[in-house]
Image (cartoon, rainbow, N blue to C red; front, top):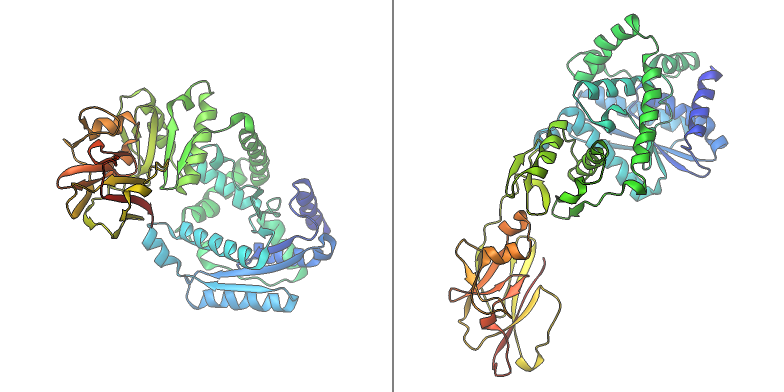
Length: 454
């Protein structure tokens, strides 16, 4: 069965999957695919000059059977003298908590475990045992559900530090190899039922396509996948640079100019990629259509998207954020000499000598005259009808107009806080001081007000 090994060796070389001295972590379920990978790399580790280890994640889904899978993997690794890591994770609990399918929850857990080992042990490559049948199932599922280019491109041969060296093999080739060498493996009985979408496709639909249309379906789809993945890599090049703004509070700001002068299909593909990555979800094609429809809509128009997201048209941008993130309602009191926590920020007020007051460029720090100040300050959200005297300007101005003037996006605008004293706005926090409270040469008492990360 050297032909099977040569096929994998050639695939690894053609795609540059392994380098000399790589430290390899094999995702080991105990099933035929991962057992093949384990024996293959154990046989060729001297040829590649690599170190190998394995990790098993017990999903606790099948009671004693799951435990037996874990024990089996441990025993095989011990026999081969391969370092072994194992983790028990309650997949059902995570799925309920995050409203995910069992499959998605299991995937999330597995990859978080992989990355934990990578950072703690020092691993160069993670090997997963996806084969060409897995890829065909993925492409067909995504195609049926109307996925974008990334979805129908299938399973990447490599993504960051994850490699899939047996994508070139189908299940029959793997099983024949294991039988010839008498390598034992475990069978997950849940794969034999049609309860899951992928199993239904695998057990019912694909065999029909192979028997009636193309017996080499997996190979044909893999060739198409690799071609499409090459196209995706090309779209990631500098000439398609994306000018979207990502915010640490999980919103994406898309300038309206982003949609001008670009091929629509290219811009939509790049947009979907950045949104999928930023929100760690898969947006639907209908979501992208809703987002692009806002380009020619009026300011303030919004669209509800899937996965708890909302898109809103502002003056010069389209803003996308989690719909569940409602404006933070704040109503607090604070005195000079105190600090209070508001969300993930801290607001503080300190007494200072007026002679020490200096002009700072930091908008999160201001100095105010305390000559006419009452003891207690109030912190709250700005309200319709609020007015203040912007420092350096004559007369009063509506807070809403000021926030529009500085082009604050609608999400930030809803969460803007104000500092008041005796019902007068002292500070649009982090933005602008009220002129009535500025420090002058005649100021006798002064205070420093500041907002910082909590």
